[in-house]
Length: 286
Image (cartoon, rainbow, N blue to C red):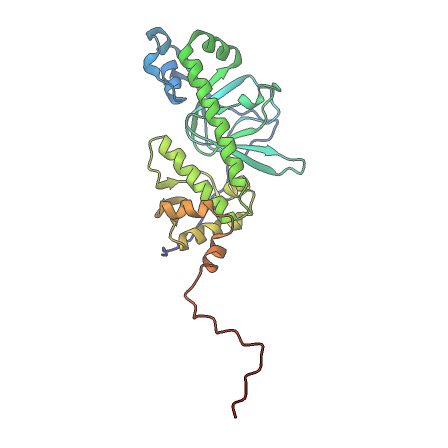
């Protein structure tokens, strides 16, 4: 089965991080409620007492391309993504930015820095984002006061940890096509959890971000998308992805070799092998 392969263009400029000395410059909006953040993190907001549910919390708006916080900066607050997608990167000694995570609706940012008191990554907005800002002192107060908030917060942190294990599972695949197939399925499950179509995906990250996240060359990402499209798993138009054959995509994600190599080694209908030659000379008949 095959599908038309469209030109894949992920060359839109990646969001430019601010230099470490520049402020993140988010804008604050006071319009969120405790009931909203509890539901956002996966809790049951209807169980909250009325006075707790109406409590107002601060929202932060981060424009596309701007930085929420920098790696190594003091940890003053945790953030919960309400809308948009954040890109989390680490800077190595050579100045290379390694994408280590993408954070979307309901994800908690900053909890991995609680042990050190400093942010472990730099978080940048891939698009217009809004996030709940939870100063550490306020977070402690809310967890003590509201059992519903505490349960939802632990659920969100647990879900974030599970996503880290899922990322490690992607990296366990040797083949770039298998890694990409797992990434697409991961994005599909995230879209389904947010109430969107699990088959029609709009990627907010560029090709270089995906390549960095999967630890492959950015040219390899385009080739891998093309291979999965040729196999009939996907239809790709720029950043719009349509999963055409979900079972086939799952099969590719379970593989250990490249999709092209698996296709080339499929058993074919071959003629029967000739009878082996006898090691003894034929008897001469007089």
